[in-house]
Length: 165
Image (tube, rainbow, N blue to C red; front, top):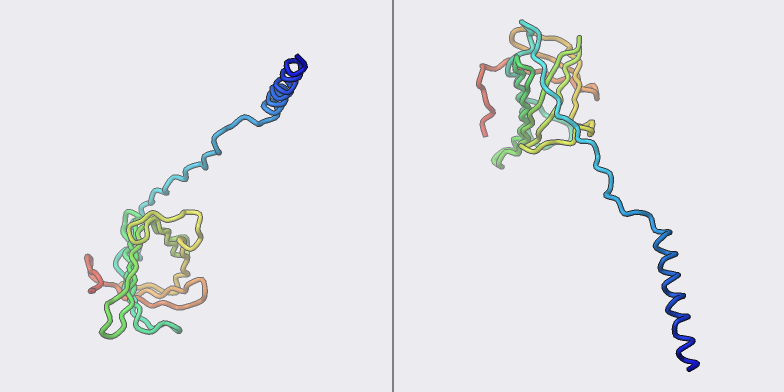
């Protein structure tokens, strides 16, 4: 008979503890969803903008073995394509293809990459926004200065020009 009297006590104590702990637990909620960032829409360039076109730069860069070929296509609708190719003798070319928007802000040429090698980019990463100071431009040549003060000179290419691979 003594066993019967003691059994309910541990059972009731366990039940009371479970109820107490359940009241202390925080409600389970889903983690907050980060806000989706909308992809910027390209804005058409001003009528008669002289930077519209295909610009090819061929240069050597300190610390890079080979020749860098860069083709920047600035379209009137504000879209841009940026193709860079590293040529190293008989080795196959290595390349990078980016697409996005461009704009001219007084003496600044701003390239905003939206896709790199066909994949969307992290729009919060500053590496995908490049600013160049326009040093000079004519019907046949464009010279810009990058943020690290590197001067890049490019020549105008015919519409539809592509880098050979």
